[in-house]
Image (cartoon, rainbow, N blue to C red; front, side):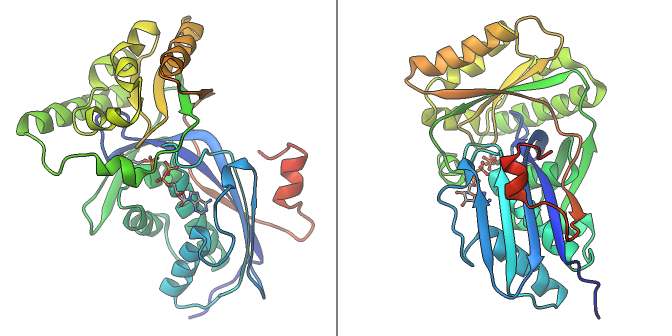
Amino acid sequence: MSYKTEQKVRVKVPASTANLGPGFDSLGMALNLYAWIDMAISDQTRIQLIGDQMSGIPTDKSNLIYKVAQMVFDNAGVSHPELEITMYSEIPLTRGLGSSASAIVGALAGANALIGNKFSTYELFQIASRLEKHPDNVGASIYGGIVVAFWDEVKAESIRIEPDHNLEVLVAIPAFQLSTEKARGVMPQHVSMKDAVFNLSHSSLLVAALSTGNLGMIRHAMKDRLHQPYRATLIPGMKTLLDECEDHGALGVALSGAGPTMLALVDGRNEKKTELEAFLQGTLAKEGIEAQLLWLKPSQDGVTTTELQSGDEGLLSLVEKEVLA
Ligand SMILES: Nc1ncnc2c1ncn2[C@@H]1O[C@H](COP(=O)(O)OP(=O)(O)O)[C@@H](O)[C@H]1O
Ligand SMILES: N[C@@H](CCOP(=O)(O)O)C(=O)O
């Protein structure tokens, strides 16, 4: 079978926050912070990574994006061993905002576009969940909005929820990195029936609150006993933030993904935004943690790809001119 191969594609993929508190490995929300990847079939592999977020990422064939793209070609039964890849990302690395999911999803979408979209979005979601080993971040980065999903080690299924248009997100991004692997390592192998019931009831209520726009219910629903109590040992100040952010204007608060970023959901009409900012930053500062605050919104868009024409400007030039959108 032969496919139409595109010359060069540009992928735009959103960051994501996973879990939203109780929805461990099952809830994700896309955020309006993005990574861009230009990918082309070439005669020699060249990988260019632009921006501060990319430091330490390999630029040879051990690069995750290159490896995932090769997997797509192998699955499709085609061979394109040499690729030109350029990536620019606004998504902080190893902070709980889904940088690895954005790289996996971006690579899958880019490689798939280069071979004429042989795989459906649903098939890419299956591959992405298998690679990431949980579907929450990749689901959000693929579909956008809020995604409710499972992955049972064989297949993944998901439903997208439209985020309420008043929903805003304040994140406090600590200066230190915390790998998902390390943050999963502090969790117990077994939990009590009581904690399991606590989480499934809270997660179900949170999904209902987010689906119906019942923002007032979020403060009750966004509580977790499966992962946050254990991970709080890795992030000084986290317990205080979980216990008290709602008193300072948050609709609800959670660890973003595996952390260390803390995330507060906020009603955009709220007048206590400055108080919440000060509380987040002040609480972490008391523990000696420097954190960058960012106001974000849910991203309606999931991953998108466009075919580039020969006259189109490269990513580096768009980044330098600050016109990338
Ligand atoms: N653009 C990228 N290219 C290659 N690898 C990446 C890229 N972005 C992230 N990664 C890999 O993902 C790791 C971070 O994943 P993880 O610990 O799950 O944190 P995060 O919350 O940022 O997803 C990085 O250390 C790196 O190995
Ligand atoms: N459900 C996962 C989510 C990890 O998200 P990340 O953004 O930190 O990679 C978990 O909680 O381990």
